[in-house]
Every structure is written in C-alpha cells, then in structure tokens.
Length: 187
Length: 161
Image (cartoon, rainbow over all chains, first blue to last red; front, side):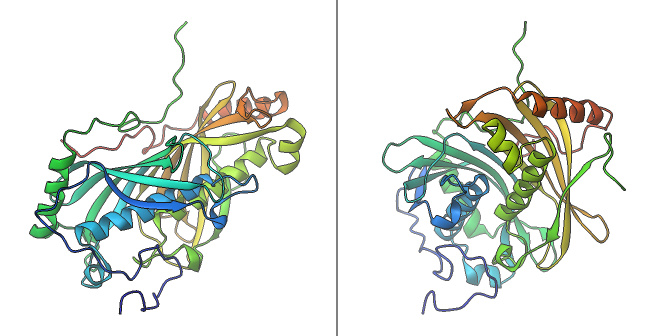
C-alpha cells in the first residue's frame, strides 16, 4: 500500500511514499506546472511569525519532489540506484508570509540536456497572488552507487523534452540567471 | 587559529542532525541553507545585531538573495564547520560568502553567497546600519578586502554552452 513504508530517514516530503504519477503522453502539459499548494506550517515560522528564509527552500524542495513524481522519479526509481541531486540553488526572498497563510507554487523548466535540469520555482500568496519568493536550481541525474552523473533513461528524457517544449514560450523570469552583487548607482 | 581581522570568521560548528537527512541519505539541500542561516545569525552577533543589539537598535537583517553551490554530499552525524568572508558592503547592505567544510579533514562541502539588507523593523523598511553596527561592518569589510576573491562567488546558474 502506498505511504505505509516508514522511511529510513527523518526528513520527509508531503508526497513521500506515494509513488509517481502515471505519465500520459497525450495529456497537455501546464506552462508553468502547478503541482503544489499548501499553507505556511507552524514549524516554518520564526519568532516574528513569518516564514524563515531557509524554509522557502524547504518548500521549493517539496515542489521539486512533486515535479519528480510528475516525470516518474519516486522511491522505486531511487531504490534502483538513480536520483536527481541539486548542484546549485539561488533564492530571491521578495515578501514575507505568515503562519497559516495559503501559498501556491509554480515550476518552469528553463533548460535541460541529457542529464541536467535547470528549473525555476515561483511562490505566490494563495489569495492575493503576491510574488513571495523565487528559487532557481540546477539538478543533475546521478548514479548513486558510482557517485557520478549519468544520462537520464530515454523515457525520462522524452518527458523532460516534452515539458521543455511546453515551457519554451514562457518568458524568462526576471530573477533567473542573475549573479549576486551590490549594484551601485553611477554618480 | 583565532579569528583575527583579516582571517575568515568561523561562524558555526555542529553535526549533521538526523532530521536534516532526506531520502538520498545525506544532508538535504534545504538544510545546507539552514546551516548557512545559522552562520549568518552568528555573524549578526559579531556585528552587534544579536538579540540585545536588535532590541537596542530596532534593526534586523533580511536575506534578500542566497546562492548555494553543492559540492559534496555529507551524511548524518558528521561534524561540520562554516567559515564566513565579507565580500562587500554599503550603508545598508552586506554581501557575504560562506563555505561549509567537514570539521575532520576540512573537505569543502558547499559554498554560499548571500546579500543581506539592514531593516528597521518599525516599517519594516530598509535602513542604514546603526552607527555602532556600521563601524564593525566597515572594519570587517576592510580587513577582508585582503582575502582572495573566492572561487564560487558571483556565479549565475546556467547549462554550459
């Protein structure tokens, strides 16, 4: 039965143990993908009652997990020795959000090759629609036993390419591809 | 080595906790940020914005942007340490670079860059650092100017080619 296996690690995602979604090659692909809606949990907020900066990344991780299950990566896939590892993350914290407030996430596939995925998370307030935060990540498909990157299997590559094609017309987000730096006004 | 003005600041020491370890069996990518945020909190203390300093000034620090390069996996119970370098500052902003290492052999596990903004909590709105804080920020910025530019600073995310 799904969701009944106690994981061997303490940190779990909301979808842990639920397997992956069946892939329907005929189904239209949302641009961007909308795979996660939730509310700000008590354990995510700081002494001010606002979501802690590091917990934005935790929520983006849950959004990634929803995306992995959308393309077919679940517990069984990882048990067979492959997974996606994050190699870079860039966060922009734009607005505060308080405990109990609704949030919704989108995910845009910016780019990909045979073993890498460049993804972009956006977090909005569930009612006002305010932009709260963005998270840009580079993920690499790895052979966990060999400890090295490896091309995704053909069926996974095909799904990723289908998503990329569906997302090709989306504008590049303003926060994407930006290094961090103090931008000084010229006198 | 003690932390003198020109040396990197050791801002956090601890071990990888069980609740930070995910389905891949190692420190989850979001919890690298938790550790780096703890180090940022320690740095806030060093510039005079610990609990007492925040109360006295009415100021706090927000992280506007953060970038992490994940370089090595690390498993539960491993002792880890964070070192912090000031890359630059102005009247209200502080740009920092932090590295996470194994405590035993100093292996580099991850690099983190953050842009911090001083906030007057009564707004909340951006505000210049309080004078006592500003003096410490400037002293550290000047001392760290002598350090080499770190390898993973100023990176954008992109596929090669």
